[in-house]
Image (cartoon, rainbow, N blue to C red; front, side, top):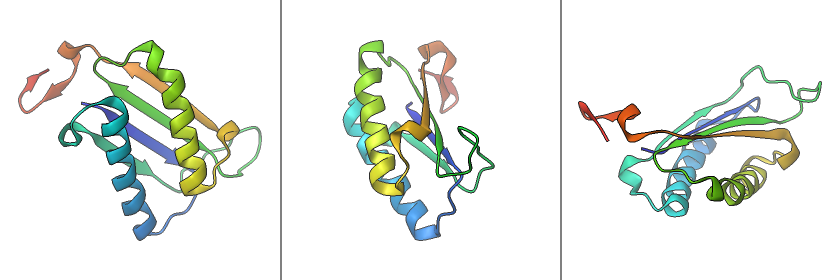
Length: 114
């Protein structure tokens, strides 16, 4: 049920993409306390993305989940920015994150909803 999407203007090779997806999936599962079985992670690289008038490395992130409490968004923002800085060398001040708490009835899976 958690969906994590990272869109960046960086060009990444296949090995880096796979590693980043795997690490992000495990990290989100742990931080959200949700089984990794339900975590979906998407990476979009080489996006036409300008921030602050430059094409320097930047990222736009979406984190959607059922039961995402407002009190968790600040620690998650810090963790996500730290992760992107460590793995992709993207400065935290060049990352926007959109947090969305999805009601169970609006999240479908396996022919039904949660």
